[in-house]
Length: 513
Image (cartoon, rainbow, N blue to C red; front, side, top):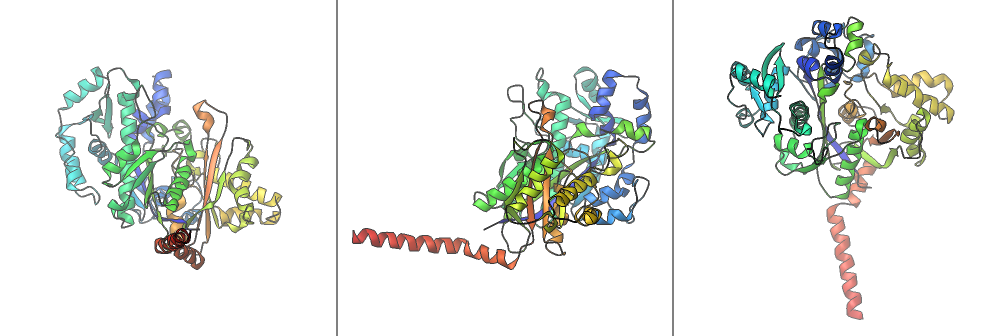
């Protein structure tokens, strides 16, 4: 079979401590229900500096500077430890500070909604001029700043959403419509944050993997946000707007939504589009969710620890035709949680991981690594949610024991050998399977792994339309000699030869008749 391959991945984090306070749903809700909250008073004392966020072990893992298995060398908690030799730039991407991101919001704004204060613009333009991915054309899109008094009026009297840096008002996002709540200033900031962080991830993917941007023909955006207006609240298109911002001049695209499972749905779709020949190179992109900043902040403050959900996450993955080198995407081994699957943990694991393997006589022990919900336990354990990846791996191992694919005494070893500690921010779609794709590409080409399963799971009941869960999975596999031979059999030249021969035979038959 002529499988498509993963050509590369890009991962970014954006440190946004002020957005935790002003845009995270936990905090904005608290201001509504308890404006005199002790939590809100205490929260500023628990916000990290940019350098502290850069030094954080899971953040260095997310951008590729630390391998997931190396996180096991450090005992939890991780927040009180420092990654040696930490850097804001990594093999897969970068960690961007808040001030640069605020400027990037304006660069990505094409409707003159973002206003920035004069002195802030002067400072940030000089800083951004040194960024390796921001070119002069993009930098020219930072508009001339305005007086702070004008921004204050827009925020206090005209419903604009304030933009803050180091606790100070430095800009705002205006509402895009007078009465449409879907185009209100708070929502427009959410949308611009998705676009900007998604574009940053895509630009890092392109740069880190030496991709010719003109080769990308289609973009699938798969975050948990949805843009639109009062007539079609989720009918907009982040994908094409991100493609535009990243300079993908030959690309079109569309959005795909599935809560946390969205990215894996998108990965399977991208693989199918490339494999079928509809598009040659397809990028999937996910931007960050401002609403989920500080989601577990109350528990973090209660435990006298920093707010660890202070970063927006973003990622991009490029899928292309089989090159005989990069890992293939096995579209013939796809797990899926169907309507009739059921919602028990065993039923979910069986449908996503065991059932697709059994169809081709493979066992769960044949998969070298499972990338599941890779949520950072440093964030979830203090909030009472436990270690999410570890719980997933234990369930997989238990099912393997039940199906007699694994001896009970090897259960603990299975979790260690086939699993990984979590390192991704808890932004729903961000930790769901895809954080490992960059590492998997390396391990399946330069390392000693042969098969990796990417698993996305989603909570559809959050939309109040169904009580169902959702999930899909796909296998990334080392590109072998057998695959290369398969590619040769189905090459364009070979297909043309077969068609030409068939046409000659048909012509001969018609002449005889």
